[in-house]
Length: 290
Image (cartoon, rainbow, N blue to C red):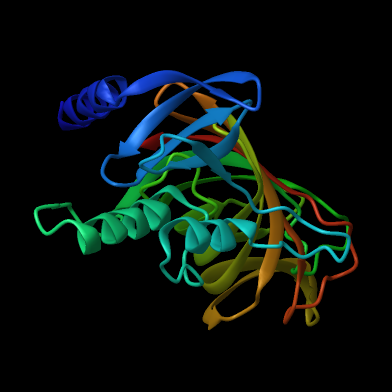
């Protein structure tokens, strides 16, 4: 119920943000007004891309841009534009809604003693998810390259932003053994994700598990060397903490109040050797915004 109320409140807030039609370079565009004062901050998304504008007392719109040059580096032109327009140093401003909003608010407050604004820092949000899949345990001895099913749950934490690029996650997964592969394991992992393709409706990211705690059990069956008619079954249990830097790729597709997620994990690791099999570690799941 709490989640539903929060979702409705956010939806209402979004709908009530001032939005008007402007003409910019002979293009008619719909923009939301985020800040109003001596300088206004306006923005919107166009085909999944964020565009930001500043408007001074002369009512002229100026777009804030950050273009990647031939040297594969961004020119940070928006910082130059902000300084030229407001007369204030903008070298530490990021091209994000929060950073721009904070900068414009400070500029407005410096010229108008009655100007007030909320300077709260961005809040963190969370998603919880469940997933299942198949793995051949690429970092475990698996002579016959057998795959086993696994299932798990995850908590993901990110900045309160419509399209966050960075997030951290904590997940737990458990894989059972089969008749052909007598190895089972439960792993708790702490990791990080970077979304290099980041749209409101979908994203693609790289991830790394930089810390893991794993408990495992291997069942070994062999003949008694003193009596060939006797079968001995040994269970070898292990547990340990590692900093393996395990890398993978993932994608999220928005559906309802959450995302369908697909992760190809354990492609390689910085500090664990692959045991010779082509890595297969595929998970499909769903995570819900809280």
